[in-house]
Length: 156
Image (tube, rainbow, N blue to C red; front, side, top):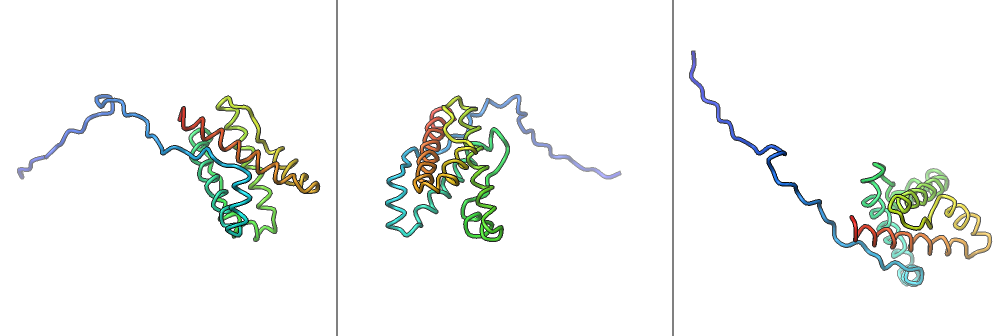
């Protein structure tokens, strides 16, 4: 028979470790506005608008995924690839899902529900016929995200 030794190190069990504090994220942006979106979009030839929508996608995934377990496709992937491949249908589906997801999160956080899939279809799509509809939708989207971020900053 051979002699051997076993080196066992003890690791603390979860029951013996103190409760860890939940991870805190940096404060989320609550200063989105339509005038800033339009003016900086014009000055940067649309680059600011792409960045802002990209940031909204990241923020929605941060806030909502914990509750619903879903992920929203990144805006830049949608804008540059999927939307064109699907002849615009991808943009419609993406906008519908994003708006609905924001509305569900507002309801879950007991905030006034200002964004739904209906908001997307009525203001962004049908509202395009009265020209200012997409601006109203963008205003509602930016303010809904401000409300969600303020609530997330306060309650997590």
